[in-house]
Length: 250
Image (cartoon, rainbow, N blue to C red):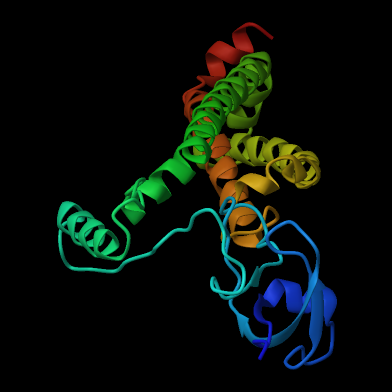
């Protein structure tokens, strides 16, 4: 009497092959292991698993009973409060009781597996963070230089404004306003460019969208704050302009 061939498919496979339908009870003809295909009845749906990388979408998966499709090897996932060495010893002992010639290798803890999987993405993220910090520092230096040069070129104008009754607070606000206008213009050009470039790093992200509004807002606020801070020193210098000294060179 033949045993009914069954399988369990993942949610990704259900969406791929049975969109808008209930896959339970349906049949798939799929060769596993590689060989002639066998018709299998779908008896369950399992959650998706990211078996390649956290940044990649879960692949379509099908699970079959080991007794119906023996393979050359397999993996066990064991949850235990014991130490890894104790678990390894217990597993080897149980496998030895079943078959003394069956090898048991490749013991790894889940934190080690996750660390190995995330090591390259973490390193790339670190490099991107370093370059981003350098870019932010260069932007702050550039804004400071532009605003400082602008203030030095407008010393006479600022002196005349002060002589005509402009308060030092008004001068400070004027310089900071111009600084923030420059920053706003830069953000108006930079945010669309960032949205286009985000496609290049989208595969490196996990649990957050490449166009996450909160992240873009935080970056915009940070850049505006850096611009304001970079323009504050020249603005303070403009507040101390002596109108007599400025007019003397007019």
